[in-house]
Image 1: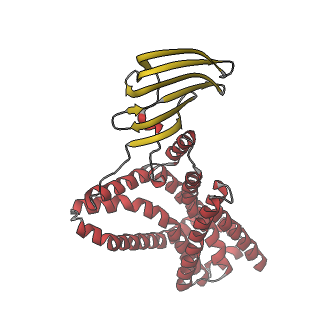
Image 2: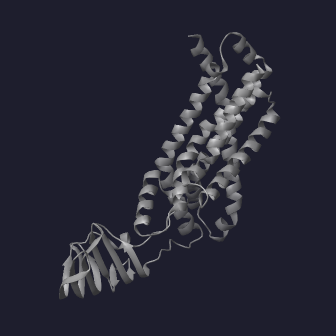
Image 3: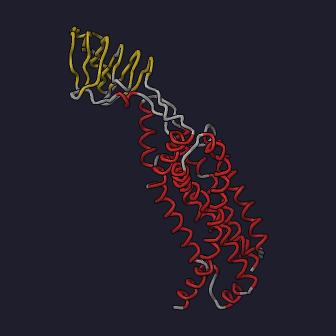
Length: 362
């Protein structure tokens, strides 16, 4: 019962500075963004509805990124206040170890991380996509441009097929100069080539072409049949045969993972996308990580309100710098996982060091 009352008291002490810090940081981000985009709003003669819709859907991702900063600032404020009033001394002299005293803070940091992860997997990607769409179509009026013609591509299709085409138009579904090689167990079995092909409900209609079958592990031509028009039940769609540019922040982890598999099947580099995938999972856990770091940091040294702000700014720049440094390393030097998790891993190691230092000081 005593621990339950203590945990409730500590949680109540944390809530107010956290909400104040979080609200203040999000407000600063919002106001800064408004001033940055002010010229675009005015020149594009954007309506109030468009501006509000853009800002409302842009903010969820910004708020997720601001969450660890608010957590760190709040925990430094709270523990600094408890230290100045000697309440921490009273807790420890009462026989309650710090790890159990502040278990409620660790649990709060974990819950915030899980909530951030859930938001990043559900509505944040959709909101971010909508904000980009609103900005391009209703504010700067550039529209959503997309490439529709693709020339001289070799791509991997379904069921062991490889496609080559001289030109593909994704709007009409028309392909010029298609050649489709079908492999089984890595061995060429069939090849279909034609002047043109187009997508229909039954598959693909090839016109003025030939169907060839191979034997002896693809070394010899077994048959060659010419045709004027023939339907093949290929399942690929025109959009499946070309890479579509996406923004990782507009996809959740499952969607981005699926997109990476598709890019690999097209033979395109995906390392930068893999880094973003692991970073998408690492970012929400930052709230728990900075909580683990902030508690021993506040216990090792007394923190005034001014010092708490200074520590928060310094550690925030340190963490964000590690995030960017890790992503840069992951492009060629380390694995995407190691690069994306460098910041979280470094901060957790630092927090363990501070805990041991704090124990040595007792």
